[in-house]
Image 1 (tube, helix red, strand yellow):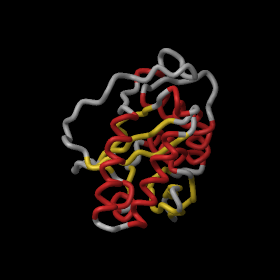
Image 2 (cartoon, rainbow, N blue to C red; image 1 turned 90 degrees about the vertical axis):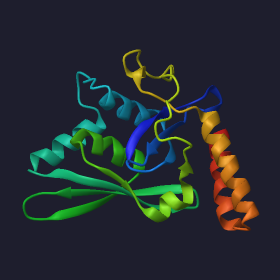
Image 3 (spheres, helix red, strand yellow; image 1 turned 45 degrees about the vertical axis):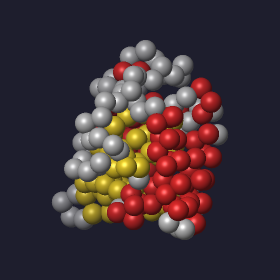
Image 4 (cartoon, helix red, strand yellow; image 1 turned 60 degrees about the horizontal axis):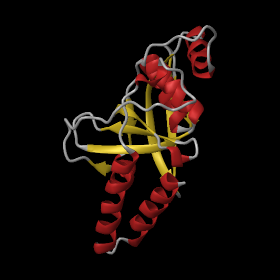
Length: 193
């Protein structure tokens, strides 16, 4: 997966949608994250170095001090509308996996240029079909919490995400897949705040 961008709206109550895009596909995965995590991701994407290490920079520094690196990050589960992730850390002797929130796992992954994966079952359940892989991303977000330099990150409109989720909800209802419809409904409610 690739980071497509961060999205917000004034009605989101300070939450952001981190939008992941399939590297060789047309599905997107929106994950609701907090302001701090959105800022940590945006800072790294824009190559902005704060004067003192932030939490995710500190994690990178600690991992590197043990002659280790982040091999990959996997968003591996979706339970009751909550995403779960694993960070795979490797050194010359072993590999360990660490449970993490997807927002934190991705913030760490980009600091190591590590690949980000999403389990097929998670993407099947929560992914949104994009009409065009080459589709342009909307203008940059201007959230007050970010400094002017951080705000360069590209975004996807929250309205676009809600429109696609609504279409997926209607399709799930027509297919009589009420479990999937309930999950999509819950995701819509989370985005609407």
